[in-house]
Image (cartoon, rainbow, N blue to C red; front, top):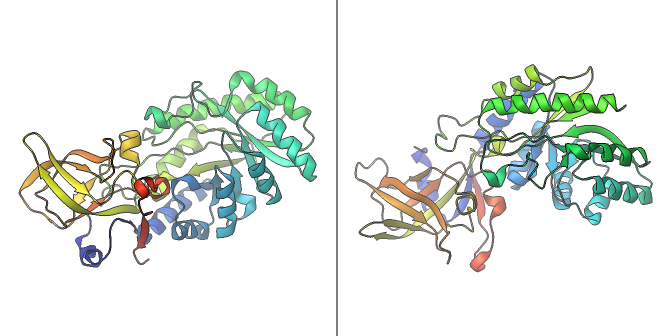
Length: 385
C-alpha cells in the first residue's frame, strides 16, 4: 500500500497530476551508479522514458550520459547540462536538420541504423567540415520475450542494421572520409525481466565484435543498450532494481579488450518506480456484470494500458484498508472504448471523490501524455528529497 501520510497533502490539489518521489529516484540512481562503477561501465539515460525537468536534473547530477532519439532530446540534454561528450543520438529516422544540429553540438556519437544513414551523415559532416563518430546499431536477432510492440532486436523489426548488411556498412565506412567508427550498438527490446536474455545478447555481441576486428576495425565501445524491466505488480517490494545482478551478467559474459568501454542505455529501470499518477473518482457505475470506476485521468494521461495492454497497480488511497471489496473496470473520461486503465481490479468499495493512485508510472507515462479531446496537459508534483 502506498504511504497514506501524503493523502492530506493531495486532497487539496486539482487532479490528475504526476507525483514524483525524488528520494526514491536519488536512491535508484545511486544504486545503479555504484553497481555500474564496480565494472567501469558507462550509463546513458534514455530520455524517451521521462523528460520531466526535475527528473532530468537529478539524473544529470549523478553524472550519467544521455541517450536521445530526437533532435529536441539532444537539445534538451545539453540545455539541462549533460556533457555533449556523453550524448548519443539514436533513432531509425533522423532528419537532416536533426543531424546537423547534433553535429554542431559536437555530440559523442550517432547510433546509425542503416547503410543509407551512414552516407547521409558523412555528406552532412563534410559540408560542416566535421568528422562524425558513429556506432553501428546491429539487429542481433535476439528475442527479448517481451510484448511484441516493444521488441526491437528481431529481423522483422524496423530498427538497426541486419547482419547480412554489415559488409555494405564496411564498404560505406571505407569511402566515408568524414565518419569514424567507434563502436557497435544493440538494443533488443524493453521491459525484459529474464536476465538470461541479456546473456544471449552478450554471446551475439561477442561474435559481432570479433567480426569487426577480423575486418580491421578496433572498436572503442560496445553499447549493449538497455531494456531492463521493472516489477509493476510489486512496486513496494521491488522499488529499486537489482542492478548488481544485471551488470554482473555483462561482466561475466561480454568479452572486452583492454581499454574497451561498455555503454548502457537505461530508462525505465531508473525512473519507473519513482513516478505515480494521481487521479480522482468522478463517478461509480454499478452494473449486473460490471462495475466501473470513472477517473478524471485516462489514456491522455497514461497511454500504456491502451497501447500495450500494460498493467499498473491501482490503489484507492481514500478508502484505506476497508474490508469490503469489489472488482471494478477502472476507466477514464476519454471518448474511446480503449480508454481503460485497469480491468477487474479488486478495490475497496469506492465512491465519488476518492483519490486513486496508479503506481510505477514514471516511465512512458507523462512523456506520452496528449491533448486529445482538448484535454489539459498533465502537470507534476514532487516529494521533498
